[in-house]
Length: 109
Image 1 (tube, rainbow, N blue to C red):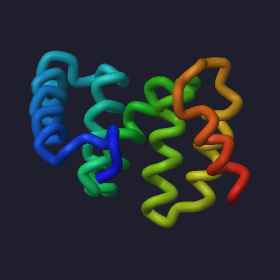
Image 2 (spheres, rainbow, N blue to C red):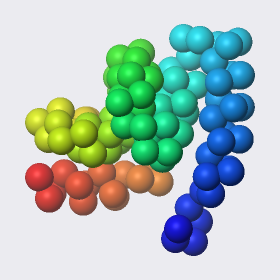
Image 3 (cartoon, rainbow, N blue to C red):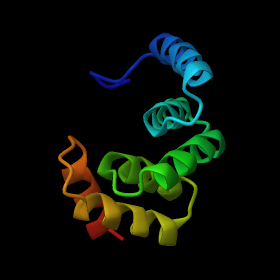
């Protein structure tokens, strides 16, 4: 793993905490996005897309959630959807750390 990447133990702990958060706030888009992104990092793209799509539907203007959907869609081979989500992420007025990565992904499609 590269420096700064979470270990599998860290991801397991994060998943456990995110699941607990979902028990108390099952419809919160931030919780759904966090769960989806953890599943993405674990490598379970199908489950990731389930949570991330719910989050993006509840917060369609959220640039970070659109970036996460773009990444998961891209990894799943859904290039048309990925491009749409990266475009939304880039156009979002929201500032987030991965915005430049979203621009890079969009330019490569």
